[in-house]
Image (cartoon, rainbow, N blue to C red):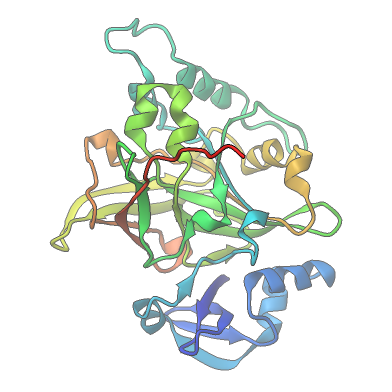
Length: 330
């Protein structure tokens, strides 16, 4: 099942089930968050509740998207109660591209960089028996709910950035129940979006490179994630033509960690189990246009698509003015 959040022509929020090009509107709930809270409270599955509440009203997805009324598939009315985080070095095949960023020119090729060491740790210990903790992955904080952009919205690169590059990824979407337990609503396709030039300068700049917008959706896949997910990532130039395109894969079959292990190492912290909070957690990627020497320019469009998640995620690159900040003493 694919869930979509959107605005009506009257700018009222709705949530519905996407079937082909049609959104079947769910009655009695206006947001995915409301629907998830009700599912937890009634001990029902999210898909079961959504199906039972779906009404007779239907909305055309393409018309809604063209009007710019598609919303992220999950959000929180108070953006500060939505954590956006992620893990890296989790996908098989990602090591070469990532290590090339972190290896010093002329360094000892035989010696492993820190990123390669962490990648190897994941390969050796990222898939423990279920119910047990494996090796912990690279982890980063990306921002709160205010940074999340829906399909059709701009991804704003801060003016001080050295690069604005896509990262086609799958994200897990979660709600912390009143009992302090994390509940996974499902998964969404995303563009995690980073400054790879800054990250390449020094791996300790990873945190700086991540603090910016991300694209998410348009749809929430309810249920289990397939072991193999295939998709395509594109850069569409200002002339409307595709100037870079590459296929990507994800899912546990293509990863060095299980999703369960990645989830454990995020939610093992009490801070991330605060009742009522929403979490969007990116699982990493192995495919970057930056690794192919591509630098995206303002006005160009990122497209991330996978049949598993329905319609493509499209976001235009914009530049956000970021004047120098001088703190005032009180």
